[in-house]
Image 1 (cartoon, one colour):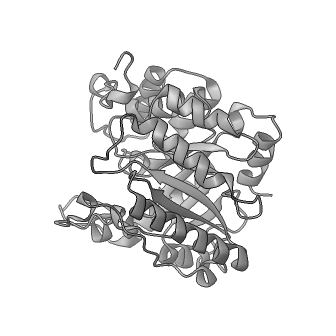
Image 2 (tube, helix red, strand yellow; image 1 turned 45 degrees about the horizontal axis):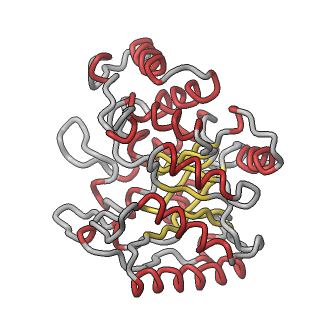
Length: 323
């Protein structure tokens, strides 16, 4: 049994402990950012996709994550290389790539309501991974939300037939929507879209944007027997942003974190995930976690991007008290 399934069993059985918190590394950026996903090298040029995949291997071999999320093409390459054989890490594939994640340089797609789209064929996914990510975004727009839910229903039918499990990602819209309180609207849409879904096709867990303590506590506590709630990471931010986000989310009921840029665009992916584990499992504060992370960097001879003081800043307003 992989660590993911062991932890899910403990969480569903009401035996959650901090060591059961699930961390997923999202390395599916090539389906969003294209050639820009691996980032720039020392020469100022974009690195090749192999650099991105090498980091997937490092994080997998560290044993610090439970899931490695990839594009299907990356999953095929790493599977052929035997990367996941004998590890506790579950490989997963992004199963749809809606237009709101199309972040090509110079592109304007996220300025519009997303359109449903899927590149990966489920029959091609199954030989390399039996778990994948399906994403939706709700806009409080009847036609667009109806089309999204129809597409999700069709996907579930195919996934059930192919024997592919999925977890559901719910993005916040990147454009303004007509809604007095988006966080409560989004919680209601999540709950209602899953209420009619059988356990045979229900998502393994859910991940969404951290919309603050009250919203997180509400959706995490709504139906924990059927829906395990998790958070997504968003932009890179400071180290304090990363550690405070995971600390607050776990405090208010999240049991999963799927972070991409917060891990990959840090000084060192493995040390960042270790810092995340330290905050959750040892119960230290995010401030203490930042200082320990900088100590780890120094011990490895890695130059930090920021001073400790600058890295202790909470740049994300939702994480600051009284905001």
